[in-house]
Image (tube, rainbow, N blue to C red; front, side, top):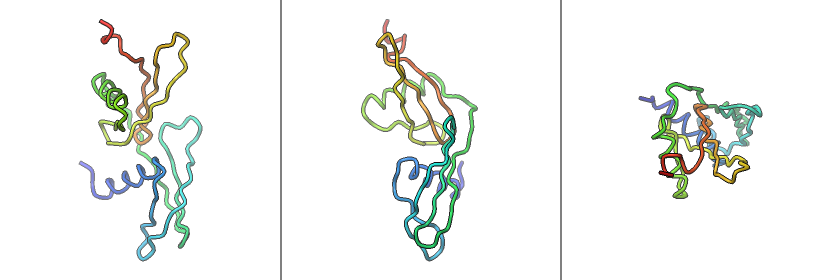
Amino acid sequence: MKSEREREAHSRFVQALQHEHVICTKAGCGGPMQVTDHTPHNGKVKKYEAECEQCHAVEQITGKEEHAPPWDIASITMMAEIHLLHEQPTCPYDDTPITFISLPNPRRKARYRLLCYYCGRHTEMNWPPPEAKR
């Protein structure tokens, strides 16, 4: 169970991830914050720095890397089906929006990389899965 502080930090992370407006939390300010992505090129967890445009307060917004337990086949299939319905799938462990990246595949089969930038979990999958071809 997440504490109120953890829920608020996760909410701010999702706002930064989805390029939404982030508001300064400093008492009496409430100004807009300029968010900059400081994630390394191969980073599995996103790292942001937010600076208030009014009071110049700086805040680090980052995910919490966790790889255990990994996503199971049922979770991966559910996220893919939600994605195919043009809705936003979320990580079953932390409710962070999942990013789907289409990978090149010379055999013209759909291949995707699924990423959760909050916990760092990721996987690759073919679509449709082999079970669906029977």
